[in-house]
Length: 308
Image (cartoon, rainbow, N blue to C red):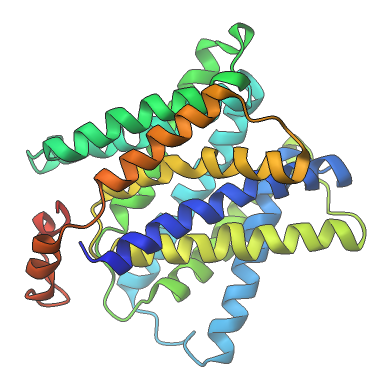
């Protein structure tokens, strides 16, 4: 696992954390329903990145394997967005977020155990346990007993499985398909997949200059660049480690909410933040592991390279 790739995954989690604040501002200021927020963040990311790829002359020449990866990732991303916001509607933001992102590393571990008969190393499992405790502490203030609906939990678990699927499906790159082109086409196609859901559940466009500025920032930075960094980091970061690192997203969102929206950070949130940060430090690349990666070919198909 290279340090550069690990930091890319951390950067992706930080960028995702900005999406919560931007989405809240967009929904409050422009009265944009959650499904439409998901639609616009995907379409804007897809259109902007696709235009960038086209300007650079890199849009042509996508192989069949590349298009299969695009369609699979787009379907999983569209499913994740729709399931997550449905979980929020059924179980509340705090519980839905906790179950969705907290279950993703577990889904990845179960997939690896079932398909490759291997499990994460003890250090990674310890980091997961610490991260889940921190995640629970960060989310404690937003959890309410009335939110504990079985249906919402099931939907949130399905959303976590969809995010795990995105990670597992992209743990090895398609030759000739860079992360920017993959994300560009994925979100353009995925946005079109979400469009019927938005039309059925409530469609609205951002209003005014402020609304479109928020939507643009959320689409380009919190979505497009975040996924580019995340998928690029999967070159040497294992799917399990990547999903554990993504658990810092709510911590970033809570910190930004305190700075921008004036929300109060309680002791539980701060304690959870320390636990999450400690989990990330536990998963940092080790020098000997980086040496082994640097000695292997770039396209090494051996999945065990990612378990550093």
